[in-house]
Image (cartoon, rainbow, N blue to C red; front, side, top):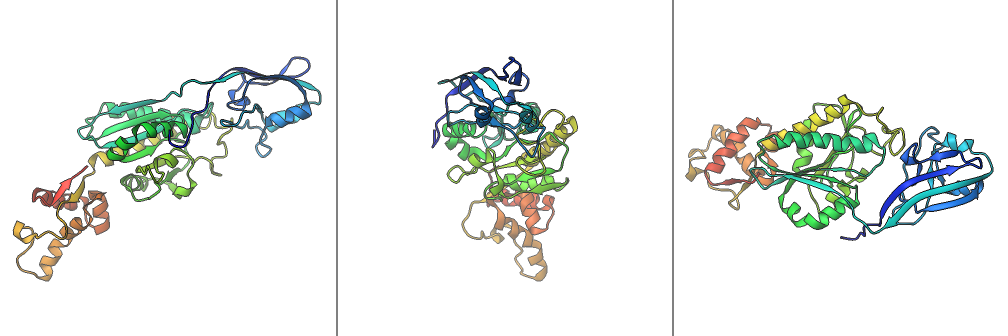
Length: 375
């Protein structure tokens, strides 16, 4: 599976830290973030000073429980708020984690909705962050809404919709479907952090100029948003855009993960109070507009090397004047940018012409056998 090995499956049933009187001072049943993800089983009695080596908290956010995991090194631990940690009194404590680590399965789901074209649009979201609302639940919720919408559409394109564990899930999926996805994918989106009502965030693809990038920027012009450089990535776009994969995948978010604008990120503060129906609906609408733009996009590619002779096809005036040059300027522009990478709306923006005029020109050139529509 490329350069990775899927770790053993982790099953947890209970976990707690109890004081000398048997009171649970840290309890997995109270909040599942209280246990370090992937903790190995343990049942030990130890002094507070030794227990402290296995505790994780956030001094800068004293009321928050951090979300922490350890996949590739065997360890155990508990996460708790800094305030609760300070309340622990010297003495003996019993630490219990009832868990298993053994060979198993990694579950994921994919849904492929066929369209009139085999060319594909990818929607990918992840299902692996326990108790996270914006940084987990919001992505699958919005993606499910988009899937239901797409299922009822007369689709031009085929849609590949993934519900996977972050990082390992995308790597496993790519290892099984890479050649097909490289051949078919024209645009893709990682759907995450889409539930709050803050300003939008845009993370472009590694190359920054794919069809997905350009459509996303056109749609986002209607709202307040901040664009981040690709180097500030941190989700599955790292896998989809890696050099030997290089799929045209971007991410449109509300509050971007791991930024000052999202202080609740990877803590218990990322709860249902943070996300709202209005926030989720806003993100759904942005993605719906991107899908509409893609469904209505027309992408052409020239079929003749060099500049074709337009005159013999009745597309170029037989008398060269200033007026006739102006008349064919946009036609030459459409030919120049009909490279299979720019859609008609892109070309119109480059030329400063209307999308309708460029679409009409492309239609004429296609009818004359000079362009082929590829998407």
